[in-house]
Image 1 (cartoon, helix red, strand yellow):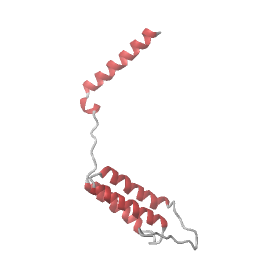
Image 2 (cartoon, rainbow, N blue to C red):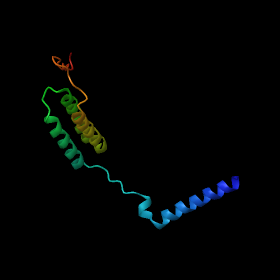
Image 3 (tube, rainbow, N blue to C red):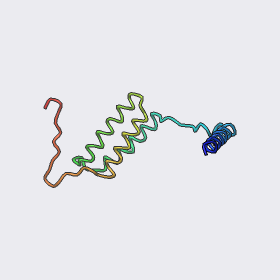
Image 4 (cartoon, helix red, strand yellow):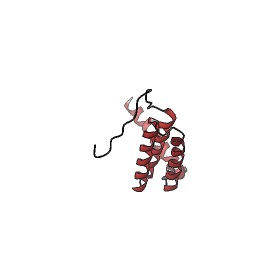
Amino acid sequence: MHLFRITVCAFGLLAGLGCAVAAPDAAAPASEEPTRDDCNAAVAEARALATALPPDHLSRYFAERHLHQALVEAGNGEFDECLDMAARASNEVRERRHELRPGEKLKVLRADE
């Protein structure tokens, strides 16, 4: 039984190596890094969604915070993080996870409070 497992594993390894040699481009998928343009487009799309909500809507507030962080990440050259934060902003607007009950207001404290 042990010899059978070794034979099967060796055959699988050789078959995998044979496939990699036969198609070297398929073995290493081309991964395209996001660019500043990709980030700007994602932020613009998310911002358009956010501005469709009323200014005092809680989901818009959180989406705008995510968009701010996306621009900070873009400024640091972290375009993949920028895309992630823009996607979070879009999800926040689409799902509207944060709602205020009637009569409630959002009180945002300043840095000195």
